[in-house]
Length: 377
Image (cartoon, rainbow, N blue to C red; front, top):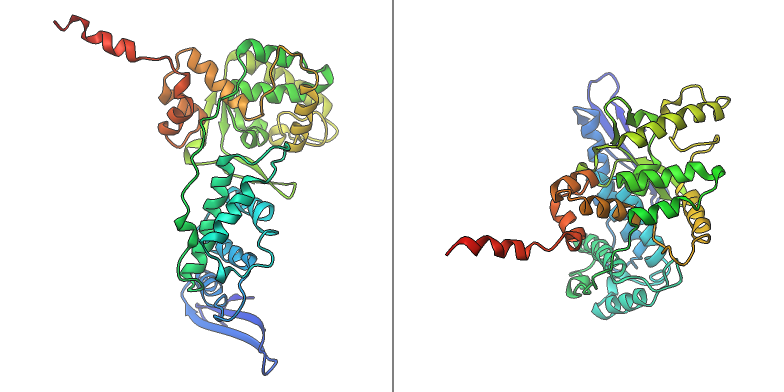
């Protein structure tokens, strides 16, 4: 045990092992006693591992994986969300690890940073095109954060990423389905694909994010009050799902749903209990879309979306899964919902996010503002 209670005492001790000594061959151990609580001892251990055991000599080569590990340790100590850590890890392995595999990070300069950004700008995305400017900017923010660890440890004197300005991002044209287009989309599903059809209905009628929707169980639906409680989200790392909290604190919210959807969910729940009766006894914790022993995953949804898109006619455009959230927002805006109410329903961190994203969908009010002065004279 690294942290344990001292024998015959009420205090706690830390006993850390760090490999073998190069000269004596004996195990290197670091001990400290007298902590009044287990929590105090655990914090000391975590800090010691991050700030003492990871010190390096100036003549050692520093690789990027080492710096990234230090950064992750600091993030965990500071209580960063699992989803945040997973996203950073995915990006590191996708864009950084191979590119810097032979680099000594102590010798990095401004030119190296610019070359890496050029590499990102010419790198393919998953659809065969190029990475977006927004994606490149996000990777450069992560790069800067990784190198800041090296600055704090005295490994490098300054962070060359600070000299690189953010690339200007072009305004993206938002894609979404109108109500009529969404009805056409629903008709593309077969009867056997109802669980997927229900999933996309939830996205359109609630504006939930993909991970939030995948995390829904019957426990989250209040049929009496008529709302869905969004309090968790599923994230993926190396194809494995992890349950965590939503994107931010304001993303924990109640989303009220219309009566027709409530009735459909009730009807489906009865049918699901018949389909899954031999697998489940307590349905409260079952994912609401399941029609077999296995729950739907992001990869199931991606594959089904690709298959359904192949059935489209020319009159129906193709949109991304996240665009169903935009479709929800667009429909509400066209029905005169106020920005503040939309912001709370979508779980945005602030109304600024809502306005930045959807302001172009709101009708132009400049003429009505000017007309206020008509009766002034």
